[in-house]
Picture 1: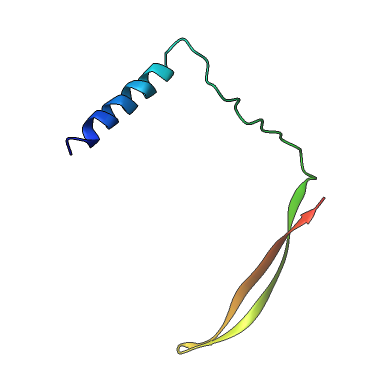
Picture 2: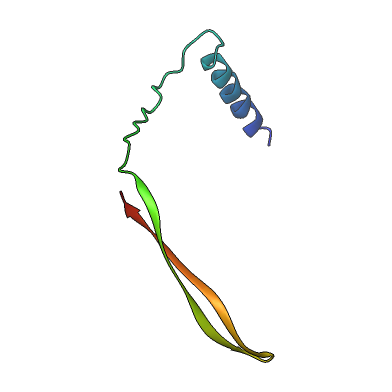
Length: 70
């Protein structure tokens, strides 16, 4: 432990010396480009389906949707 502590202290001082408040960062921020995609909308199909339950047959609504380019 006695040998590791001075090495860690030196690394901490070096890191503090690099991060001065007035300096700009050393790396450039990544550029984010936003390309508008074609408009999308949901297309849905619905129907009624017979389902057999313990209480009796029930007419139950069903629906399936998917995305379509507009």
